[in-house]
Length: 379
Image (cartoon, rainbow, N blue to C red; front, side):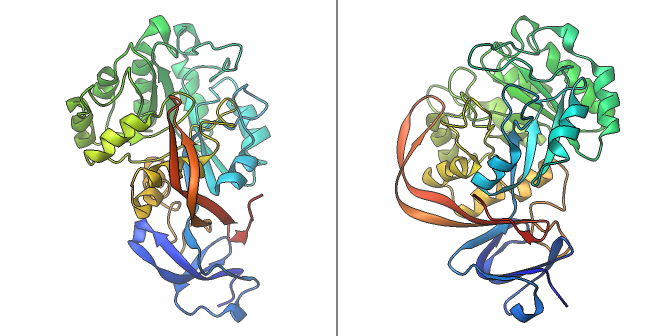
């Protein structure tokens, strides 16, 4: 068989297949064509030696904001992907029913890396998020339009993966938990999962979890106090454990103020790994504390999480959360995306959303990206 690209001799990690071994990966017609131990380079239009490096399914960042130019918080998806080896960026509600068509035409369709989206239940999405102006879009219930959200979601089913809502003192103010109840009605009507943002109370962490359904995603799950998933004594709250048993998914969503090393240490020490690791990358955290998805993943490496579990949280688990089984794996016939990276040893400063600094010994360095079966090297 003729291949478009063969990656030779890399250490392939694909948690979806329980694959953790040296192997070659071949691509043809935009998809994974074969994995083997002796795929002939002569059979490929292009061959690259990736020995000494890891090859994983294309990274998925489940929580980003990439409506660049259309919202004040958006970053350029191509730049973000090149920096962190991400092949699929999932925008977490930057656009709502009133501006989603513009997001699709001007950002999603021209983007080289794949962009999928949660549709915000608020009509204009997250419309006032900057250094000078911060208006919680869920604070005014007049902006929530369930009928419009349903119509737009049905119109763009190919790229909309769920419904997004933000609740908390900053995001929903005096509206409290009411926007979540409205968003859940929309998600239920559409048969789509919901992603819920949580910040400072009210509502409480427990109030939000109690309302979520199996397959729904709680983002910012490793928040600092207040609304942390752990008690002051470091024990996981019973509501968190019960929610996981019910099938609620827990996403990191690092962001500007939503990830604490203290919380992560307590959760991981108790054996509670997040389902997905995501950056919540936007213009206010691009220069720190987030930087990119690769840095976010490296923080978990330095907290003692095994590499295969870190990769699982940005590949197969993320694909399952958005119901896209063709992503997040290198199975034959799956989407032809791969991330090539190295784990470097040294001393690397890391900081969380509270300002706590940690000197890590490991850095995740992006060495290459395959998009739709073709080599797409990072900047």
